[in-house]
Amino acid sequence: MLGCVYDNFVYALPIKSMLTDFKNIMDSIVTDILNRAGTDFVEQLKASHKAAGQVATGKTLESFGFKLEKTDYGYSLKVVGAEHVEFTDRGRGTGKGSPTDKIKEWIKAKSLESKFNIKSESSLNWVASRISKKHALEGSYQHRTGTTYNGARKPISSVFEEEKIKRLENLLTSAIISKISSTFVEQYKEKEK
Image 1: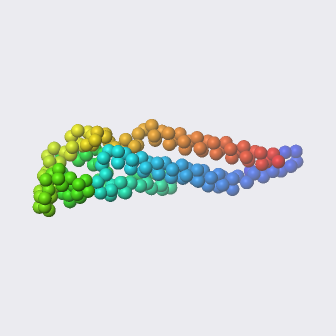
Image 2: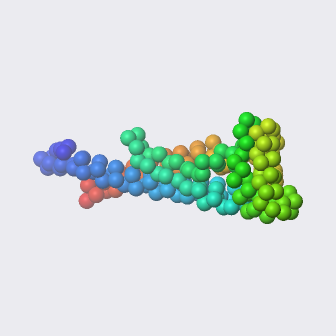
Image 3: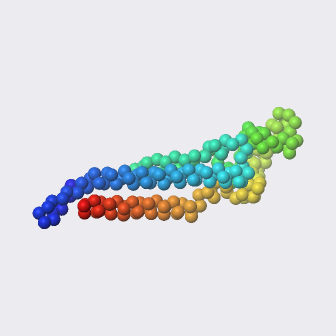
């Protein structure tokens, strides 16, 4: 408790409870803003993934999400996706072919059997294996050209532009400053009564 004396009148400020209340209010503001930001990032990722023409089975699309965690230093907002998301952003480089089972899923989901003249399971296996070998030797189309088939560049990482991150930081700072200011004004008005 902090005490103040005004003309023989003692007023005690409940500093500890004020700080606890204020911390709880700030936590609420920050988590609300970060939850909205996480939701926005996920929606932007899904829209970018669709616009890039990369949706086949829908598994990658459905894997996008976010986790908001309280840490010793504040909060951590992690946007998450399937393990292979990095390949949907930059393509697969040389050295290792794409998994043939995933290529087969992709061919079926995109209805590309006629494009590749696939008439049987064995021809599907052969085409998937050829595509995988080509990826191993040359990299995927996206890796070689820098774009998806419809011209999109880095559809995943483009969602996390520095400007968007700065806007989020500014929004958090503004909200915190605004709440600090209004809390102190409210406290002052309350004490003046």
